Image (tube, rainbow, N blue to C red; front, side):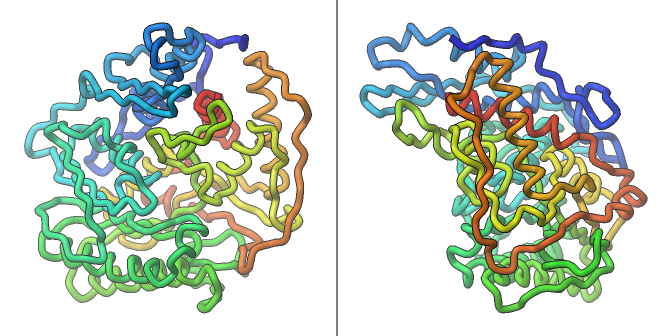
Length: 447
């Protein structure tokens, strides 16, 4: 039986070696600080799954329960628990017994906030933070890549509303802030229907900007480092115009975001809309798995947040390593990426929304890895976690190389000078510590 580490041994250290106990900060008159343990109790275990035959529900495996308790950090009262029955391939869901405690804000400080794409990976983490801070949050999502279960732990809360809606259609609501995140972000998803991706970027942004104009709401759009294409300038600063193939397989996303930025600044100059543009670089984080492998059967648990099968490099490497499969690197592995942890991104988005900065701002981590180096780092961390848990793999996974996809950028690293100077923001999470949290979560989910 695997050794179970006590919950108190799982700590996260920032780049200066200090333990991270809270995320967020108070800046620009907006308090975004919450305890990290409370957040973890939501995104790591808001809907966890245990296995038990139908007739033995009361005899759940003590190790599985202990594994889950490591993440809830004493906040079990705010957890739901789902039970998977492998003998009948069925799953029994429960609801929360209580909502997590949220700040009680006076009406003058409580914002009405709309989050489009709020059931996706980034959106659901943003929703958790805004809800814990005591604001009124409305999630708008068509669930093409998102899932209701990423935010279902808030359903029924008086401050929360979830609406199934496609942003390409107009939507009316009264709000103070709009976080416009709606758009597929991973290559398999945005290339699945390229025309729809472009339509979402343009029509969705047009509709949300129109709403911001009518309600005089602050507007933040999640743009992307893909607007720089395969850059000829390194690192990439916000004044670089980019090097993009307008007709390639990635163009539906790259050019869609570029025209969305054009539209955003058109509303800013012509109609005075208060706009903020976040150019988000590669982001990863621990969240729900879309599929778990139990007893050799792929089942559909409550997920996803960061989908491990969405074609993004971090989740791909971790899942492959945990399954004992060789890690797949496309190209020669010398192309570079910079990876930031989800909490740093949420800090940056909230700071940008509440600041007076209207120019585009890069939100990313300046620590640059080649994909080959990153694969080796993931393998090392997976092996470390397996050793600590007393699990010895049958063999060491290898790194295999396959042909490079079309228009895949060779180098990607943000110049975050503007974020540091205008927002007082910089990443706190090291890549290693973020990866270790992700690996521990995926390992517990896939056990």
